[in-house]
Image (cartoon, rainbow over all chains, first blue to last red; front, side):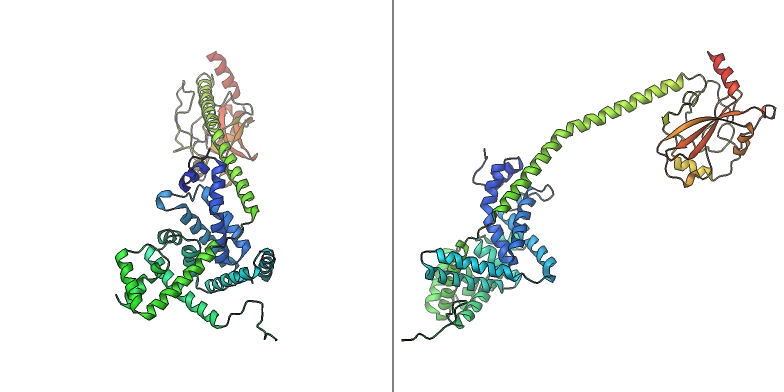
Length: 206
Length: 260
């Protein structure tokens, strides 16, 4: 039986003791956030998959054991994921991005939209998200990672500081600056018109 | 409250993060009076709403990651269990090896102590041995005590022996007595260039007595026509590393019979 269903540290200890169910619960609790953070940071699904796997394997590694006294499990996992993403990105900087991945996601989105009950509302929703993601992607890395952790993964300032290995004040000031930059970018995008991506404006005929 | 201090707490206010109630009231009061700051707060709130929307947008994680991770988890767990099970066995093996080595040493000590003709006689077969070559310090003739059966000096490493090999041989480590006591091992030429001696075999040979002279051992001219028994240490590579002279075979035979 799992010793402690709610606390990460309890699950971690149970997983180390050999309880597979505890490890599964821990993984399912954090997999989405870690994968999404890695995906948004690297913009590559293959890197995100590898990094998610590496982060959870590192949790079981004897050399880099998580210490609950030093911070939360979430900040530990996000910190490992971030380091792996940066390492992979620096390795793959010489390679050109794979265009098919973007095309595949667009196709998947279109397919998903056709199955939703209110495609127009969904289109607006997705368009808003797409413009937000575009603006986030355009941020410098030091601002992007703070926005991803504080806003999209909803970590606190302290946890983000632990994950990124910098003081809490730095996180606050980076987030403030990042939000200001994002607002500028989003306003600029809005100024270009209410054009939905992929649909060119046309005159309506009577 | 001015626009500058408002700007400092703007992010927390827009994110609905915990703000001191007094400060919150001051911020809202400033918003009421400053149109620019009010617009800024509205924009920041809209941004926070967009973030909340994005945070709710879940991305499907590929299922094969979980499969691979659980496989790795099971593999590591079984490996660590095997390690735990192997732990006592490993130490039991080491203890058994130490006990066997101690028993072997005790048997060898007893064997040397009860050997009638000194060390090296009984092991004239091709039994595998550990080399104990003395560096032959000083080369001064030392009269061997008649009852001395074992060499009390500690065994030296072969590399030390090879150093002494480079020095001129003026005298053997120990002269052959009338009772036929052996000399110490004398390293053979070029043995310093060979690899470290890990194991070896002792081979007993009969040599012309004059062969002792080439190693600086005085030869009794009255017995010059009689051969002398020697043991040659052959290394694991099949190359002769050292030699020791055991004396006259007949004398040794008589001496052994007399002791019996």
